[in-house]
Length: 193
Image (cartoon, rainbow, N blue to C red):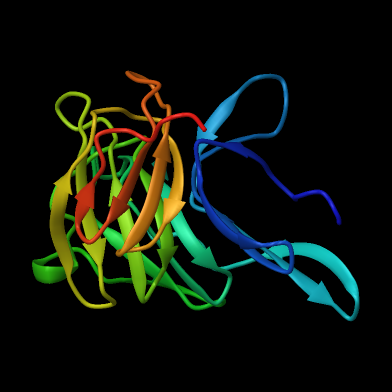
C-alpha cells in the first residue's frame, strides 16, 4: 500500500486493509510542529492498487477523537478541539461527514477525549476516556440512539474493539485490566489462559 498524504496522530480511524478511513487529529508537515486538523483520508482499491486519497473533511477541528467502521459506513466522535470533551458524533458515507449527534438521541451521553470506539455506523460502542476525570463509562449506538450501557474499570487511551453487544478493552492509561463486554455488562476482568 501507499503512504498517507498527511502525517497525523490522535485521530479517528477504522476499516480493513481494503476499505479504511482516517479523520481529524493532529497533523504535521514535519519538524515536530503539529496543527489540529479536519482532513480525512480514505484507503481504497484503485483498480487493483491500494492507495490513499483525500476524503470529506471532518466538520470540526478535533483531536483525541475516536472512530470505527469502514470507509463507507463509519462513525466518529468525542475528542477535544472545537468542542472540548465533545459529545458530538458524526457519520461518514465515503464522501461526506454528517452530524448525528449535536442534540437529542445522537449526542453521546458523556463528553471525553482519548475514548475508544468499535463497530460501525449501525452498531457501535464508545467507552472509557477522560471526561472530568478518567472514566469507565460506556455508550452503545444502534444506528439512531446512544444509550448508557454500564461501566468498566476507568481508563483512557485504551485498546479495544467490538460492537454494541460484544466488545473487549485492554490496558490503557490507568489500568492493565482486560475486560469483555457482553449483554450490556463488562466482566470484572479476563484472566490469563
